[in-house]
Image (cartoon, rainbow, N blue to C red):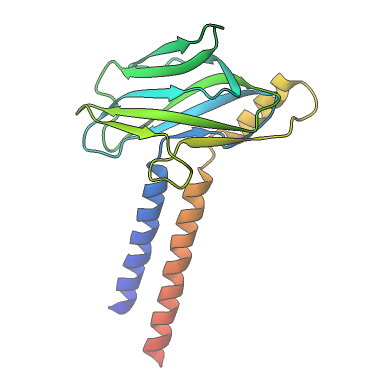
Length: 201
């Protein structure tokens, strides 16, 4: 009875911590070289009973976004400054959007500045009930802005290196999600071992 209870607890902890991390709106990849062309992916999960119908993303100063991949059932609108640089983009659903059990991804291309250190992506997620979740906080906040760290520029052509890095990061899991899941699993296994040891004693 105790053994089955501990196993259930391990599964619950793993699912809970993993879901908490993956519920965040994030921009991938999490690390890019300076002075490189990149394909970024905005990941948007719904975490309410209402559907996600709109997402606004503010473009950090350290990256110059140029192109967007079309997404069926969604439109996008760009805001630019006086220099013509894209400062934000809004994706709007033409249909029902993403339901509580769904998530979506929006791809766009940009060049990372040579002097960039990190890219903080502030996002605003709008639901069909009119509520807006602002993903603009610090890394340890409940609703953090997604951050992409910028490393030293690599040798060779910036476009070629950017394509290579984008390919390597395509489909990669969020590191935070991975580590939280591992931590929950380890904690559960240790608790199970302690419980079995007491039972034998």
